[in-house]
Structure formats: C-alpha cells, structure tokens
Length: 177
Ligand code: FES
Image 1 (cartoon, protein in one colour):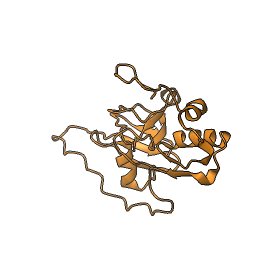
Image 2 (cartoon, helix red, strand yellow):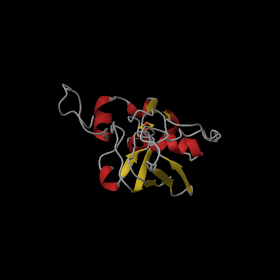
Image 3 (cartoon, helix red, strand yellow):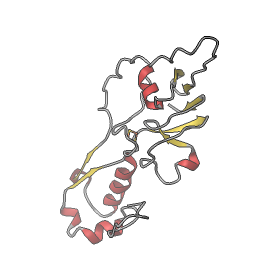
Image 4 (tube, helix red, strand yellow):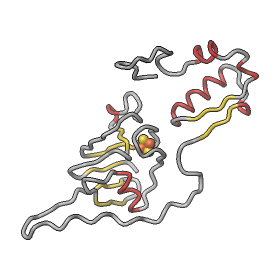
C-alpha cells in the first residue's frame, strides 16, 4: 500500500519487505508462494524470498501481458480524422515509436497504446485501464495527459515514464517503444 493517504486503510503501509514477509508467514521456507502483480513487484518479492531461504521452485508466478511468442496482432485501422469545414487546416498529432521506427496518427480520443496497436508496435499491456503498470513507456518528447496514473511507480514521472494505455496528446509525441 503506497497511497493510503485519504483512505481508511488500517493495514500495513509501504512496499512488501523481507521483514513484513518473515513477520507474517511462519515456516516460510516450507511454503509455496504464489505471486501475481506488476513485474517490478514480483521481481522485488522474488529477491526477498530468495534471501529468506524460499527455494525458487516453491515460488509460482503469474505475469500480466501477452504470452511469450504470441504473434503481434494485425494492425487495426486508425480512426480517420473528422472532415473539417472547407478551408480549415487540421493537423492530427502523431506519435513516433523511436525503437520501432514507426509513427501513427494520434487522434484526441485514442491513446498511445491504441496507436501502437494500430501500427503493430508491441507494447506490453494487460488491464488497459491504468492500474497494472505493464504498459509503462518512456516519453521522449512532447506532453501527454493521463486520466488514471495508478500503474506508475514512485519516481516514474521524474523519469518521463507514462502509461501508454492512458496517454493522450494534443500535439506530437515520441515514446521509446
Ligand atoms: S495496460 Fe495496465 S496500466 Fe496500462
């Protein structure tokens, strides 16, 4: 629980620590552990479990996102811009995917993840509602707005990390994907 302010949460606060696990689970090395959550959480907890003596074969994980080797879906059509009144210039923002050397139109009602899907740029994702954090990507240029930011990690904003499933823009942007 990292954002308990303003809630009636009365349980443990902060990240899952070795001390919390050891205090909460008797006979830990003989237990099976089932882990599910954002990748960064699972990696941190797996390290802690190892340090607490839990054999790796007793740690089972479930990862959000596409299965390994899953083919990239066929690009879907991007919603074309509305036809403007005669004589009105309309410049639709563009999102550039730096690593993939691709770009896509970014209409105001579409997210960076929608645009990535449309041109076949793979960005891991699962919930698509801003909570799992799997779609975190680095914003290289431009500005985005995000309706939900729950999936961001502390410090992400300072590093220009955004949630692709939430990121919308009114002008050109570029992301590391
Ligand atoms: S897909 Fe879960 S936060 Fe974006």
